[in-house]
Length: 131
Image (cartoon, rainbow, N blue to C red; front, top):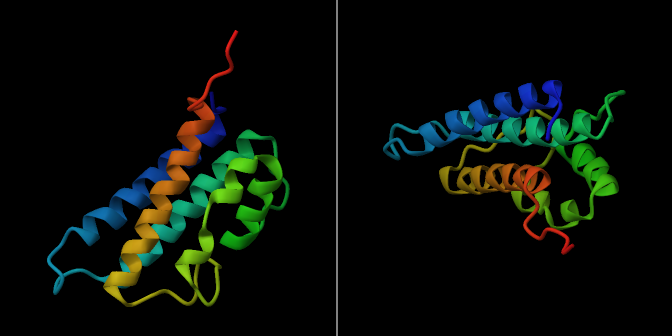
């Protein structure tokens, strides 16, 4: 179960993911790739941060997605399979180098969904130990 601070961060991540998905579901000519990218990346950051906060890691967390994933990988080997690299961003910080290609930002939303799945596995592990 998550602590209260981590739960609040997860809820923020859920809102960013929902915003990204709502923008993605618009007609192609109406969708704004920057908004999808921005919301997806913020969602990923929130989910990774929530995981670390729940693990007791609250001091000076990195701002980059790459740095957050690195710390998550140190805490839990499941994050070794989290492919942040498929975002293919030039810079993984929150506020620069956003994508403007609609096809590419669909991948960003998929990565955000994967980050959320990893959190669900933390709460409800897929394989429970046999007693």
